[in-house]
Length: 221
Image (tube, rainbow, N blue to C red):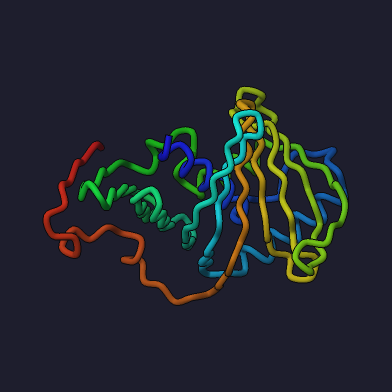
């Protein structure tokens, strides 16, 4: 269950990396917002986000909020989720899932995540080809004017039925995102801080076992 929540988290965060060359006959206002968002996002060499992540299910009286950090650079990413005792590294080719409490690291190929759930680069492609979108309107969110856009998957077999993005009108940056699942779960991502163009070497996105003595390595490729 914990891993599934983390997967959906990456899916939502990956909205930052989505392409807006989506299907024709879309809402022109929504497309204008997403085009500008895409241009802004692509201008960053790296993105580092501190976030809160909430799972809500009103029917089952579930309301859980946790925090984490994700760093993105091209096809590489690094996700830190302390509450799940998990850190995921990906250099675009290899994925290292490090379970800190168990001192265990599972290695897989990035291409093996066929549903794209663990790879923001894959989600980039999914959004590009698989969504319709519509403009909802403007709202005031924590003192900021945000533009709200809903994304609907063309593939109705997806676990989620809608992704709602809240885009800072002045900065063209996502400040909040919600994923609505068929099972009644709602996943809410709120950005606490966002830093861009931080200089990071490629090794930052690779798991170096010499820095984690005693870790058990399971190569599942």
